[in-house]
Amino acid sequence: MSKPLTIADLKTRARRRVPKMFFDYADSGAWTEGTYRANEEDFAKVKLRQRVLVDMTNRSLATTMVGQEASMPVALAPTGLCGMQHPDGEMLAAKAAEEFGVPFTLSTMSICSIEDVASVTSKPFWFQLYVMKDREFVANLIDRAKAAKCSALVLTLDLQILGQRHKDLRNGLSAPPKWTIHHGLQLATKPFWCMDMLRTKRRGFGNIVGHAKNVSDLSSLSSWTAEQFDPQLSWKDVAWIKERWGGKLILKGILDEEDARSAAETGADAIIVSNHGGRQLDGAMSSISMLSKIVDAVGDRIEVHFDGGIRSGQDVLKAVALGARGTYIGRPYLYGLGAMGKPGVTAALEIIRRELDITMALCGKRDIQAVDSSVLADVRF
Ligand code: GLV
Image 1 (cartoon, helix red, strand yellow):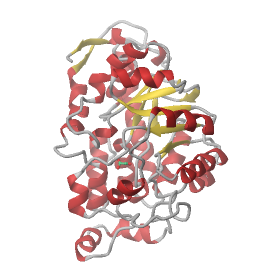
Image 2 (tube, rainbow, N blue to C red; image 1 turned 180 degrees about the horizontal axis):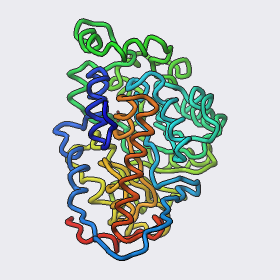
Image 3 (cartoon, helix red, strand yellow; image 1 turned 180 degrees about the vertical axis):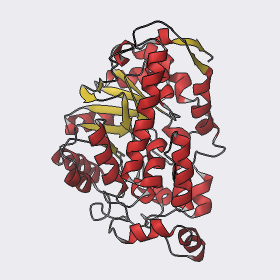
Image 4 (cartoon, helix red, strand yellow; image 1 turned 120 degrees about the vertical axis):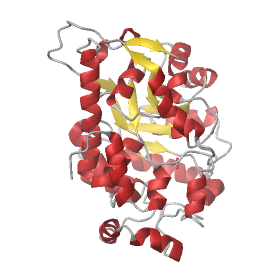
């Protein structure tokens, strides 16, 4: 098989290897998927300035996100059910990120637990928190992340109720997968995935099972979130979570200038401009079209991070040029993971690094720290 050159190559391979219900889970947006598509498409509306005769030697992509070193301004985003794209997926992705020198963020809704990931990594990773009605369970999750020496908590604000993703409902998505005829057919066509999955014991929600009380139907993500996630989450809760955690706090899911200003007032360390990959409010603006407005709204009061629609290193450069200190990739690394396991995550990171590095040079910059809106020729929104 030839070497994957683009994130799209990894996506094609993941589609071949991963059972449809899990591939679709990653590759889906809410309702019409309009915002999901806009996240990707709006990047094409940002044009770069080609510069010449500029010294291009000794280039550096190194930066920091919430004061922590990163070999490029890219972190792995928290993604639910990552361990269904590939057995033990979160552990493999965390190791690939650690070797690459970028932050890995473990989702609350992961298959491998906080403790599983801590057992295979030697540097701190980040933990993403969903807030459930059962505050004792939430406090316990925070304490487990502390005990595992996680170095930042990413608090998701835009999923108090779950957006409807038609593909998941049609596929009857569940973890562990059900063995009905419908599901069996999807699994039967992916023998390598099935064989690998039989070798691991990690097939359910590792952070929840055995830790949360009164969990009735965890196999169905939509009914479980409807039952357990707290629809009354408020800015006051951010204060107690900040206090209980006591470390670096990143607020994820800001897409509005007014919310961005409120987030800056919480004293958190960073916000992530995000619409949850188009998986929540279909019809919302694309992330990239909101980025510079949010940067202007908060000024230098809080670090601004970005996710949504990044499929190349060029997209990373554009987000940095529009004011993001760092970015997150979700689907690009999940495609790599589904396609090839840990080497696939490394391949996704390498593809993005190469594209970012060459693009930065051809825009006349040698250091990512010096990239600003002067590398852009035109922004059409
Ligand atoms: C939540 O983790 C999701 O499915 O977007």
